[in-house]
Image 1 (spheres, rainbow over the protein chains, first blue to last red):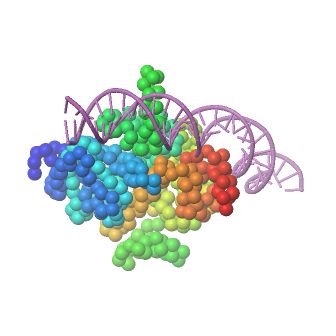
Image 2 (cartoon, protein in one colour):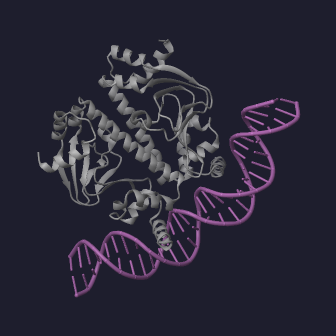
Image 3 (tube, rainbow over the protein chains, first blue to last red):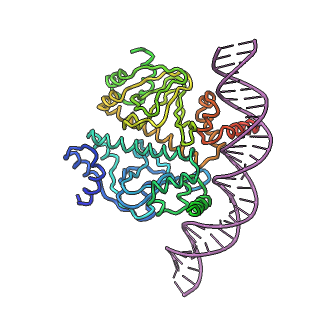
Length: 195
Length: 195
DNA sequence: CTTTTCACTTTACATAAGACAAGAAAAACA
DNA sequence: TGTTTTTCTTGTCTTATGTAAAGTGAAAAG
């Protein structure tokens, strides 16, 4: 196992109180993968068999809505977990795609290996904690769509995910915020004007 | 343990492949609770120590937004799990309230007892499955707020949660859908007119 | 080096939905 | 029962955002 892996994955798991042999066992199950720009980490219709930790690069999940429009549902960057939760854990078909926006490096683990690691209590706890954190982020996003104006949501996104706003086309940001691309362009203009 | 409990909770856990002594152990950890209309199941600011299965009645979660407005974030009815996931599992402070809309009967389990049951693999699986299902529902709600019109969302809500629409004031439904109460009133009117 | 494509901006116009206010209806209360 | 409070509706006016289309500049493709 390469030093690089130890470095990144150790960072990921460092807060957890693993015994050192447990940590070793956990780390051994992960494999390094690279994705080129536009490669798919998760494909709609398939069953997702990998849980990824993203080490480098940016990705986004999107679904195609009833009108055929591509809607960005989430952005991923360093240290994020990239996964379709339902598909991975409930073996259902993915409802959306997850695509690399830039070249990516990630560490993946199969569902089977993930389940094996569940014998380690500390691992179950990281797993649960990560899922709940994802739930919380989704809840925040959902609530802001209802309670905040488009401008407020955009400003919050800049504050929260600066790197992403700078690396992703405006159109994808707009659908993530739930507004038209022209509206986002106007909003940007207005913000620039206020400075 | 009363027959009623066996009946309802058995129903809840019947799909799970518990050994019968495991199921017995699980059921023993639950306690029946009743709530009067307007009682709180979860209070903002506190740490939620109970995981509830709702047997009878309706409840809703809501948070107070930056402008001081009460926003309904979810509705609960029979067989639903009523919980603040983060607070229960991460011991954080609740960000929202969950309140009984009608008198309710629920079955609760403390965090400590819940953790004890994690030694049972089948129980861990129900737990995980339930959390992921909640995640999925939230995701659907979030996506529809972005991709569907107010009318479409209202029609979907009627189809999905008929009983709730009939038992809850219009204003609470409106904030759940992310629109003003007057707009919802007009939407209702338009739907009635089209029939 | 030229052409095509893409990302973004800008304008004009259309529209869904919000704010506010008044009143009707229904429910809760005494 | 009558009274009060809450809930819902309706009208008018305003505004944010959507749609469509045209134009600009830069990057990618040939």
